[in-house]
Image 1 (cartoon, helix red, strand yellow):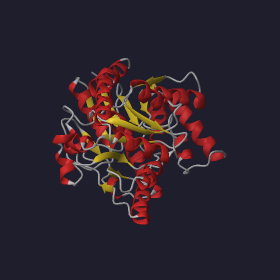
Image 2 (cartoon, one colour):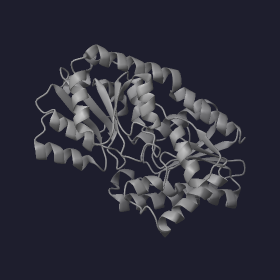
Image 3 (cartoon, helix red, strand yellow):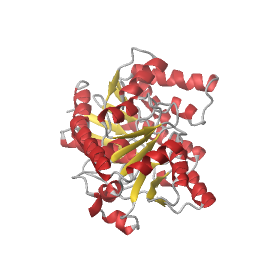
Image 4 (cartoon, one colour):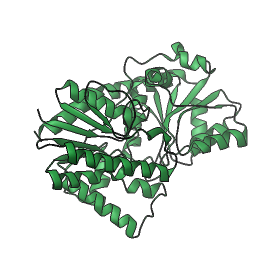
Length: 390
């Protein structure tokens, strides 16, 4: 078996979604017999396979500039390591954090003749344009689009996380790209917990309240304002809102809490992985929010966790997007468009009086996950893809 070099800036013990997903992938490929070496920027202990931890500053970087600098260090460290230790026959799997890490692929292909697979966690530079980090037009945007087009064209395969991302990438960068769709999965394992048995909710004082939860990254492409405005409109109602995680839009939650004195909003930090089954089940409905345009640029990892935990979905996104159509078609949740806070508040108020309907939507979520998604199913897809390069 040829050696696989997995290059991912984020890895265990980091608690971010990409870190946990790539740790799952590495372990799954290792169990399937791959000779695996991981290159990462995350400090930590060794696992059952070699890990080259190229710097230990991941958790110290705050802000766009600091994260970019950390990413440049990881890019250069990975390039130098591969040039010094890569050998003929290696296959490289590159995960798109930082966004420009994909440029390693063509460089290693040209210098060491190493084939590579590139995994888009979100579609850069479109994600940077939507979040306001890059201008929508001009030489910088054109340069990045050209570079990412080259990364995708020269890859053996480029993996995207949804059909919507595939369609967007083909429109933006070319219809003949070697694209493959492989979904992410829920990082928590085990049977869904009943709401009535949940210790996490009891510990934080809301076990007896109808709860809407947002768990994960508060990112620039995520719509939190619609959910927060619904919370403001529902002050004094039995509906509790819980935000678990962190990120760029954390200040929005704090501003609403302080500015409107929202006693029905609770914010908690990221939870350890071993507590995710409890925390994700500590609600009646779980929320996802996407700003307009982000629906085909990211595939929210939290969606899989919501389904696997057997909870109904509250999706804030354009109703025409694939994810909204899936939620509505499967009957596993409700959908409102960004800005429709009054509509959301009304629906939540109604659902708080309909526990049987909420439970039925949650059961359909679990059935959808078991029928169409899952870690082993996705890792099998990666295995089959990589075996084509051996």
